Image 1 (cartoon, rainbow, N blue to C red):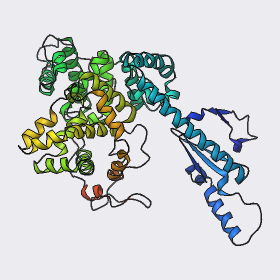
Image 2 (image 1 turned 90 degrees about the horizontal axis):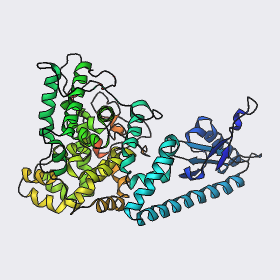
Image 3 (image 1 turned 120 degrees about the vertical axis):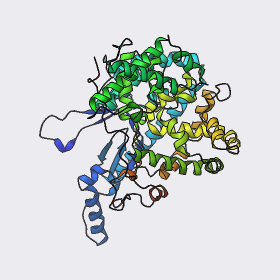
Image 4 (image 1 turned 30 degrees about the horizontal axis):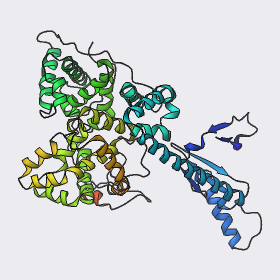
Amino acid sequence: KLCSRNLSKRGKAAVPEKQLPLSFITEVIVGAKSSVFRRHGVARQSTQDSSSVAQGETGEVPSDRAYISLVMNQRTLDLQAGTPELGDFWGRYFKQVVERSRLEATARGLALRAQPRERLMELATKEWSTNILPNWTEMRHAEQTRLLWWEGIPSSERGRVWLCVLGETEKGEKGGELSADANLVGGRAKAGSKEEEAVRTAGEWLDEQLPSEHAELSQLYAAANSPFRSDAVSLLASLQLQLQGLSQHGKVHIRECAPTAPLIAGMLLIHLEPPLAYAALKALVKHHVPGATDPEAVHWRNIGFTLVLEQELPSLAQALASAGVTPLDYFLPWLHSLLVPLFCIETASRLWDCYMRDGEVFVWRAALQLLRRRAGEVIAACAEGKEAALAKLMKPVDPAVLTEKVLFKGMQENEDSVVQWLHVLNQRLPLPEQCWDLFANSYDSDPPGDDGQAHYSEGQRKQSRLSKLFTRRPQEPLATVEVTGGHGPS
């Protein structure tokens, strides 16, 4: 462990010693380059001192080599050595620590993948239940946690992990697990009431959204007497009534705010009890891509995915364009549904696990990998026209043809390309560990100038191709209502 004290506070009071595991260090920056050093004028002072030496002045010069920044998950630890020589020594030492940590992480990953799947899940269940979840704030960013996360959360712990992540987006970084929300509409609403109307329309909407070729979802939610169907209808009707209660005129419909909510609700109910699933559904609609329906953001994603596809799969991009297919037709539904209708429940659950780990960028990675695997079929379908191409794009994946193992292996093999297309998307880098909204993280989300274009301040990326194509639309947002807890019907 690395033990440190803030020496600037000496004499004021007893300064407690802080301890940080060395494994938390992900990068070492030599020199006074961090924002903390700049805020305290260190970088400026170092430059002035160097200028003085160049002009022939004598005296002890605090070289830039004496300053070291240790980059960790959510912060930097900024250190100053007594001499430049000590700075060189500690810089080399910490770089060796980072390299050793990377090698150990690689070895652990290989060891995990070498385990039989059943044994791996047994070990992972113990680790999640006894170490990670009881110490969530400290462990959620640890390298070992992220390795286990990628391999899939054990089904016995999956719902609780999702609630912890969604609790952070709902209540803040240290918000804790989402709590159950009992404001659900019952199945026997009073005849002629708004509750009965909400239940009826929710059932119709669920039937519209269920992909007929997805055997698992149809089995759970299509039958009229299925308890899963009853719970899904209850969730959708409750959220619709809540939205109407919060809107000024009561005319906002959930279809506008979350067009694939039936699929999201269906996935949540497989892993959570209805009151918890309802709380999770509200958080996903409010803070995550299932509710990302603002026209400006939709327009940006449509152009952005087109450009990324041109870079990653140019032949497929050309075929889709010739057939008149745009990302609005297939990628946006994939994004809003978090890929639920495309994969079997087991694979979709692991995809959701990794979405909870990485945010929206993971959905883009998974979508691109699926297109890599289906490129030949889709190009052939494009020759038959738009309808045939969309039918191929929206068809659920046969797990015997594209297994979960092959899908995730492909994403790992193409991981290096992610940074390249993040630049295409004009992202502020480094990307946050959980970036729930790539549009909000892009420079294009900055307030536009009088000409409707984004204008960047000095030092920001300018004149990207996406920025040139992206013009803000004057339409009103699809929904201006905020979904908050505790106001649903009793």
